[in-house]
Image (cartoon, rainbow, N blue to C red):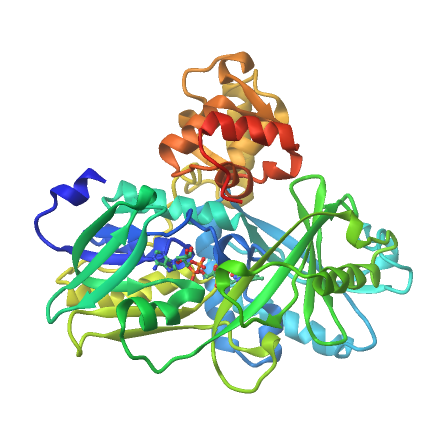
Length: 514
Ligand SMILES: Cc1cc2nc3c(=O)[nH]c(=O)nc-3n(C[C@H](O)[C@H](O)[C@H](O)COP(=O)(O)OP(=O)(O)OC[C@H]3O[C@@H](n4cnc5c(N)ncnc54)[C@H](O)[C@@H]3O)c2cc1C
């Protein structure tokens, strides 16, 4: 914060929004030598970027909508992200059970071959797709007997909220300043610079001057232009709500399922946090305020019914252990179904009407890095940076992912790292070593500090959350509240009871923002 007060010159870039797109842009810009300030009104990833299905995928269903270039670009990104953050991103095999209302088997097979082909650009390739007889495959066991044939294909899974934090950490390490709980209240465009008023925690106001502004406000991108920056624009956003439910695990193997519903929506069932199954999503029009998005009873009933069509073990609304909702900020295309609006993004760059403005409309977690690179390819020359794109380099990792090297990448590298972690900290219980290795990668050292016994990790608040981890998250990862820690830096909220949570809140000394 002090750097803000001391700065005399205008900063190069003010980024509004600490979701995946804002932090990725801040990271790329800082790496190109630009001075960057990012402001997020809540916590990092507080909104859409922690409410996704958490898939790093090409989007098999977009092939049906002939969005080949979107799928190809997303699949290329899948490799880049798997390589750069092998701790929080991992390959996941999906099973698509065949049903009479789907396309014929040969056509699905052909679509999957195309998907494999589009995804085979780089050295880091995933297992190919194949047909499976579900009557004697482990993934067939929890399904009803009518599902005899399935198709198995690869994609990847990612902890979305941690991906945001890692991008922010990297941006900061490269010189960017990241202010959470700081809202951009007003932005006025001059001929050469923007002047913005920011309101931080405790209502503190401050003014900043920036040579360019990035509007990465996600579902608020249009209202930011209308109400904060007062800039006319031609693009409308269509807000589409998607919700997920989490239930006790419905099966005990590592495959995820892709269930294509008769209404053409896709519902995924994904192994989640060791003991749970994540089921989602819905896709419905949303006209409320993005901050007010909540799952409703109809969505819970829809997702339970969807799961019950396939699994032998039936679930009911009372089985829902947790749920979350988000709104996709999609580009309005007029009159088409919510599930068929393009997931592609649009970068709207304008430097004719004054100081440069770049608006981000749409996008996916999967393509965040590419979106940021495209954004900087437009912004950097306008700001006089001559440094080119750098984030796709296979030697560039997100913080904690540096254990991958020329010999090992992806899961092989992670397994090797986990083994080394267990040897280095033999006193860490196995599950905790795995959780730390997944969440923090090589940054585990900063979490554990000088501890050499379990007792050295300090107070245990609940589940396996200890004091040193909480202190690290507050000190280094912008965590303030219990929700920041229990639902975004990790998902231990699933395992905390009310008393444990209250004790954590007391320790943090802040009121819960939930
Ligand atoms: C249900 C669902 C499932 C999805 N599944 C997937 C998936 O599996 N894979 C995938 O690749 N993508 C998926 N997506 C898409 C992906 O989640 C989004 O495209 C992405 O998270 C959008 O990120 P963002 O940074 O644009 O928006 P956000 O994450 O919403 O970030 C915008 C931020 O701007 C902040 N902000 C707004 N106004 C201001 C202001 N005035 N001052 C300061 N801060 C401000 C907000 O607080 C917010 O945090 C899914 C989306 C949904 C809703």
